[in-house]
Length: 91
Image 1 (cartoon, one colour):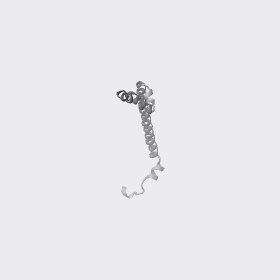
Image 2 (spheres, helix red, strand yellow; image 1 turned 90 degrees about the vertical axis):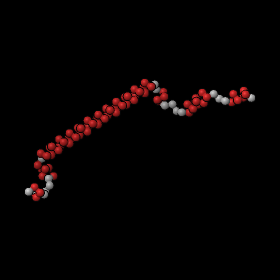
Image 3 (cartoon, one colour; image 1 turned 180 degrees about the vertical axis):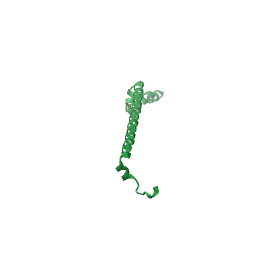
Image 4 (cartoon, one colour; image 1 turned 135 degrees about the horizontal axis):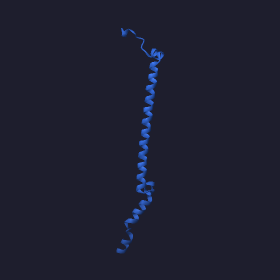
């Protein structure tokens, strides 16, 4: 009877192997640690480059807006249309 108990007990390693077989294999599992780290660094550098591009576009838009405002301030018709009509407060 002691032999039957031993045969009924399964070693722990096949149980863990079956658990691993149930889980899907991911790309991270198949790639080496060096490759994963390199991809993470590349993604980070791409994010930084994208942030720089957005900042450059924002500055260019702000500069264009300032230049347009300066041109409008030189236009007498624009100043006349956008000024207040209440001249009494300037007396």
